[in-house]
Structure formats: C-alpha cells, structure tokens
Image (cartoon, rainbow, N blue to C red):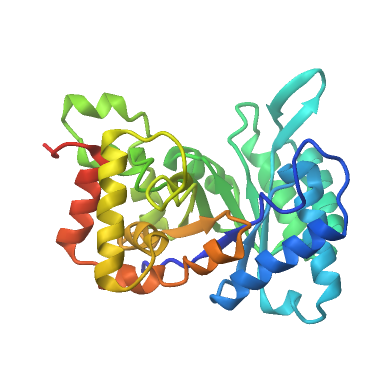
Length: 315
C-alpha cells in the first residue's frame, strides 16, 4: 500500500564551503538554525552523505546533536556512501565494495556522533558492484545495530531488483532527481509510444517498480534550484511563465511558491518525499504548507503546472 510522502531536510549545505577543510562556531550555529527551522515545520528525517562538505556536513550535524540532549531520539538520520572524491588520482569514482561500505559507514557514525543511522543509502550504482558482497556488508551492519535499514539513490528498477535478489533486508527508499523542472521521471511514462520520449533518458519502469515493491521515493533537487520560487538568474520562457503561474496559485491559496512547487510533486500518487536543501531558515519555513497544498491541489491545477513547465501540450 502506498503512503503519503513527507518533507525531508537535506544537509548537503551544512558545514560551510566544500573547498574549506575546517569549520567553526559560525557553521555550527548556522547548522543549528537550519535544523531548528526544519524541526519547527515538522521534519523528522535528515539526509546526509559521507562526501557532503568533505565530511563537514555530518560533523557539524554531530556537533548540533551533542548540544541538544534528546534530539537524536526525535529524528531519523539517513546517510549515503559509495562515491569517492579526489582519491587514487581521480576526481571521482564509485566504490560499493564490502570494505568501503563498512569503512565509510563507521566514519559517518563517528562524525555524526551516533551509534546508528536509521537508513544507509547506496549513493550511486557502481558498475563493479558484486550484489552478494554488498548484501553481506549491509546485513552485517544491520546485525550490528549500525543501520536500521537500507536504501539506494539514482538506481533503476532493474538495478534495485538485482540487489534485492541477494538481500534479505527490504530496500526501503530510492532517491532520484525529481521536480517540476526536472521531469524525466514523469515524461518517460507519459510519452510511451511517442518519439519525444527519446529526449528523456530516464529508465522507464523505475517508478512502477518502486511503487509495486514498497520502495519509497525521495526527490533530490525538489525545488528545481528555485527557478519557480524567486531564485535570481536566467530562465527560459517556459520557466518564467511557470514561475508566474506558481505565484498566482500561491496568492490564490494564501501560501508560498515553495509550497506550490513541492505540493505539485507530493500530489503524485507514488507518495514522493521531497528533500529540501536550503540552509536559509526562512526558505525552509516557506516549505511547511507543501503537504496540505498537495492534498488540496486539483487535477486541473496539477496539469496546468505540468503543461506550463514542459512548455507545450502532451500528446
């Protein structure tokens, strides 16, 4: 049975610039402000990755946990592993070996100052992955109480099925780029048997697999870099028109543009959970009404936003 999505706070921006190796009181205070803003709008899930901020995002979050006794028991923490940056003479490569999963998870727990994470997510599909080896590592971490569950990110339905064949633990989540702006996840299904489908290289069947097997969908980039909610910068004609439509709907409904944009995503019956990445407490607060706007959004309003964003009619 599919369940409604929920807002998730993405911690990628915590800890300061990625090119800095140190952080201080200002970064801890900034993280505390963002986490507090997220908690005030009811968010309980906080999303990390071992590479965010070169580890600083997890570390500064751990500092905030240490400052606030009892906070850990009120929230769920998920983190990711599987990407290596600046190692072996390479800018980046993927590593889902058993040794890497165990090593990176232990390092994340130390930075986060917690004994466990509620969900460990495999960050990217590694073409050298041995599914049995990955399953053994995840099973060990779960048995040791270091992880509560398992998720994946940026994986197709077929890749999830391959891993699940070897893994007794259920894969609980798949985190994908999904938004009103980045719609390949949607267009791949709408454009079945239509030449335009070639423009959207999203693995068709992934959403259907997740929905059939109870794999929750989490959307990174859910606000579309703010193009529809007031972010400065260049925009296409369709983006400008959609921003105007979003603003008009927000005005009619007495809510914020962020709530309309996220509500559109959450209106989808797959129960999508948007990941909010802003470190600005005001912008975090502006997302609070998204679940209610999803509930209230009429089919015609949903399609109006979709058609405006794609800049043309559907087949």
